[in-house]
Amino acid sequence: MEPREVFKKLESDKRQRIFDAAIDEFADQGYKQASVNRMVQRLGIAKGSMFQYFGTKEGLFGFIFDQAVELVRRTLRQVKKDTAEADFFERIRRSLIQGVRFIDEHPRVYQVYLKMIFQEDFPLRAQFLQKVHLFSAEYLQPMVEAGMARGELRGDLDVKSTVFFLDALMDRFLQAYSVSFLDAGAGFYRAPASEIELRAGDLVSLLRHGLASGQRP
Image (cartoon, rainbow, N blue to C red; front, side, top):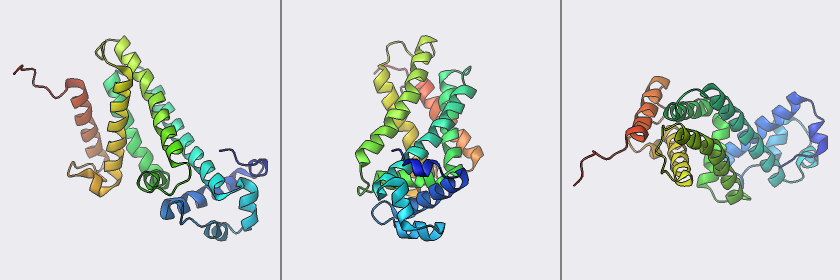
């Protein structure tokens, strides 16, 4: 959601401070309990200014969400660029690892995403989550199609089903890294970088080689 022109005219450091205050509030409190009063007290600005910038609390959250998605988009663009010459499986491995690094660098942004998944009191929740997964599909589909074209993946794969599977794998991997009860003993939760690289490699090995033994019953 676009903020109003008056917000766009603010100095960049003030815009960043507003983003930081809002992302912290929504990460801690979710949407329903988030308080514009707390945000403006932290920022030292008038409450009316926030509504002048964004119209409503929903408008403020929409702006925060779009900014967070853009952070992810920039990160994945760089991964795609850096791995352009790698094969499909290495690109997926690097994507998993970079996802963990993103969480480490922007923990509050990811916390808002988790709040949205597990709480139902966010406005336009379904629309926002659909946007996340559509963006993920836009990232993954060209990688799948390129892998098929180069003979790295089976030529008879259904692209949409493959993208769905990969999106689910990546989403669950990052959730397990961030939330202890979602780890389910897999050893992903807050694992050090060296362990995450090994675990990502294990998952990619499963993708590369499959689960079947190769023996027919």
